[in-house]
Length: 197
Image 1: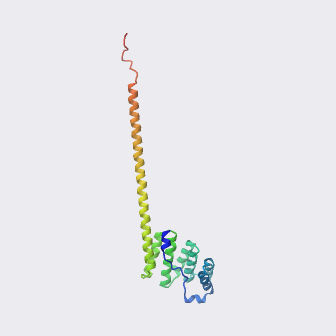
Image 2: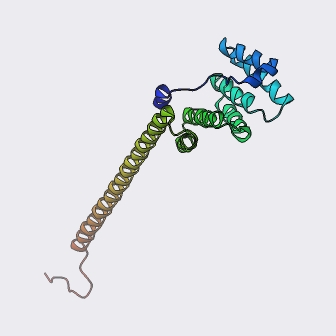
């Protein structure tokens, strides 16, 4: 969760001239600005129903869904925007926001990949670069923790093997002592004559 708190966001509805032709897109943008994310998402879905593959509506839908804490759906909306986008800027922003949404779901490897795609399209995107570095550091930290955990488990297993060996040795020693006691307390064999009185 720490990575979410420090990740910068691009989550603003895309403002493009094409929006003036779509009243639903404008309605969605107004709802988004008023933090009515469910209403904004509904408006953007109407645009997508009327014009499937509209990258701006897909991008804005992803933003509204993310703000409404529906990360899985937001990621799908960004995928739609990515596949339909023609402009480098919108495409880069969609990859970036998808990276943020993936990071929020703790999918660090996928998030790293999304940030890299954003940087391929816009190498000067400092927020994508910073978030990429944070995600890589977090992934490295997690892997180190996993290695330490695995090492600790291996040590515990070794200790338990040593304990088992010690218990086995103790049992063998007890058995040997018991056999020695039994051998000392044996009744004389019939080949030895009893004493004559």
